[in-house]
Length: 365
Ligand code: NAD
Ligand code: TYD
Image 1 (tube, rainbow, N blue to C red):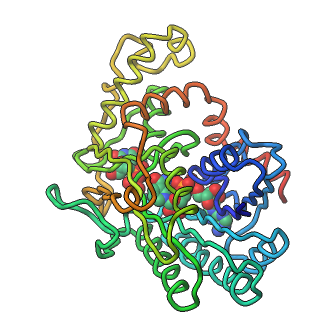
Image 2 (tube, rainbow, N blue to C red):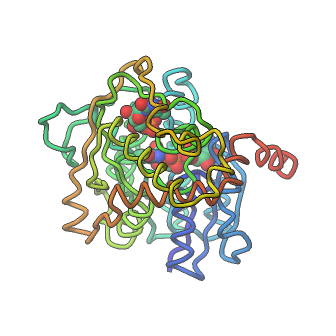
C-alpha cells in the first residue's frame, strides 16, 4: 500500500491521475499539494470530492518546510510530481515563473524528500516520480526516428528548458544521494479537465462559440497525442514496476499534424450537431448549428517563435518492461473528449470566467 503526495493534483493531468488512483487504489491515502494557480482548480477534483482518503493542501512546492511536514505528518512514501508551469506560449512571454516553479520548485521537492526519507529515514522504501515531457528532446525532422530514452536533450523553449533542468536535478539526486526516483517523459496529453488554452480544448470552446480556430504557421507541426487516461495508467505502471534511476517514455502512438487534428475535431463536431438536435439551440453561434461546417472557422495565424516542428515518442521500453500500452485511439479520444466538453459546460465556463477561482480565494485566504 502506497501513501501518496501528488503535487499539481488540481491541474489537468494531476487531477485525472488522482481520479484514476482512487478508482484503482481505494483506501490508500492521497495528499494533493497544489498552489491553485490559474491552471489549477478544485473543480478538477469534483469527481473525488468527499473521498476519505483524499486530503487537499493549498501550498507551494517551493515551500520546502511545508513539504517536509506533510511527508512526516502523513508518513508519505511516494511523491508523484506534476506541479509545473506547463504552457509553452506563456513561457515565451514570461519565462521567470517557469524557472521558479519548474526548476526551483522541483529542487525544493527533492530537498524535502532527501531530508525526510534519506536523512530522517521516515520512509526507507520510497519513490519520487517526476513527470516530464518529450519536449526536452527538442524537435525532429520528418524522417527522424522517434525520441527514445537515449535521445540527447535539446530543449528549445523556456518551458522545455526548465523541464530539462528539473529532470537533471532528479537524476542527480538519485545518482548522488541515492533517492529512489523515476522520470517519465510523455507526449502531448488531451482529455477531460484540460484547460482551454492548449490546442484541443481551445479549439473545442472556440468552435462552440463560433470563434476563429487559430492554427500557428502552416499547421504542419506534428505532435504525438496521448489520451490522459493512458498516461495515468503509464505512471501507475512506473510506480508499481519501474526501476529507481530509470527514465520511461510514455506516448500515445498517434502522430498528427495540427491542421489534420483540428480538421478531424471539426468533423467530430459536425457529426455531433447532426446527431443531437439540441446542440444548435445550446450553441447558436457554432457553425454546424447554422448549416455550416466547423472547418470554416480555421485561420492560419503568425507562428509561435521557435516552434518545434515534430515530436514523436518511442515507448518500447515502457511496453517491454512495464507492460504499458496506449489503449485510446486518437479518433475515439477526440470523439470522447468533444462529448465530455459538451456534457461539462459548467466546468469550462467556471474555469474560464474565474468564478471557481474567486470562490477558492474566499475559502483559502
Ligand atoms: P497544468 O498546468 O494543467 O497543471 C499544473 C498544476 O500545478 C496546477 O494545478 C497548478 O496550480 C499547479 N502548480 C503550479 N505551480 C505550482 C507551485 N509552485 N506549487 C504548487 N502547485 C503548483 O499542467 P498539466 O498539463 O497537468 O501538466 C502536469 C505535468 O505534466 C507538468 O509537469 C507538465 O510539464 C507535464 N507534461 C504535460 C503535458 C501536457 O500535454 N499537458 C505533456 C508532457 C508533460
Ligand atoms: P499546445 O497545446 O500549446 O502544446 P505544445 O506546445 O506543448 O505542443 O500546442 C500543440 C500544438 O498546437 C503546437 O504545435 C502549437 C499548436 N497550436 C496552434 O496551432 N494554435 C493554438 O492556438 C495553440 C494553443 C497551439
